[in-house]
Length: 154
Length: 119
Image (cartoon, rainbow over all chains, first blue to last red; front, side, top):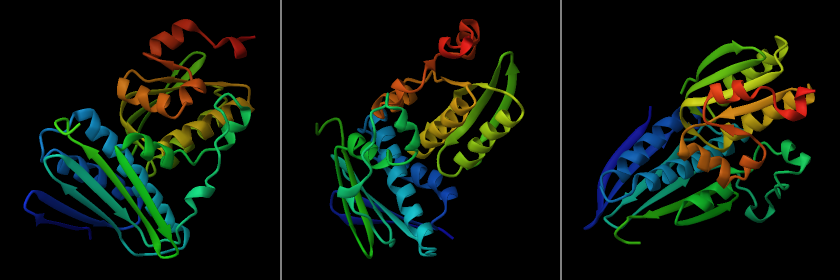
């Protein structure tokens, strides 16, 4: 079962929470819910909602992988906090974390060695796509926070 | 999410038409389709994203894996990607330098085999 809830967390914000099993079949659901949450505020540009959808998908993919890596059955939590100026999405897993300073350095695209790197694009994509992103990671899990702002704010 | 996959032969190419989302849940089916095409003797692949809504880094990883397999057999892998949104993803990740992107399957077929493999 997937947990889904909504509550008012402040005078001007609306919070939507989603908990998913750590399985790839649920990625599409997370994208749909996050895009729908962003569309509560009509002032997000469509391409920014697309950016957010992709960034959140990357964060959730990493979370699912983190649970699968250690055979953890727990759910992954996704929270979207929407206001009239921004949407913030927080993806939290309970995996073993990773060292963000120690990610593989991707070879140049023309370098034949580039073809040996099938992974590792996700985190740089999140950073490129979101207006704000931060990752906090440790032995008890990883939390990724992604923010995009509305047109009127920027 | 299941992956819609349509395999079509347009000599000398095999076209893998992808419908739906290419990400963690569907990437294994895509990898399998590439492996099967190569096992069937096809060497020149066109991956058609004309019917694709969404690709993420896991999908791109599967594509890189496909290119690696194809190159090992001296074949080619070209991409049809008419949506500006998805083209942007290739640019953001610098993979537009690795993959040739085309507007339509017809464009690729008319151009024939890429130079580096046509000899």
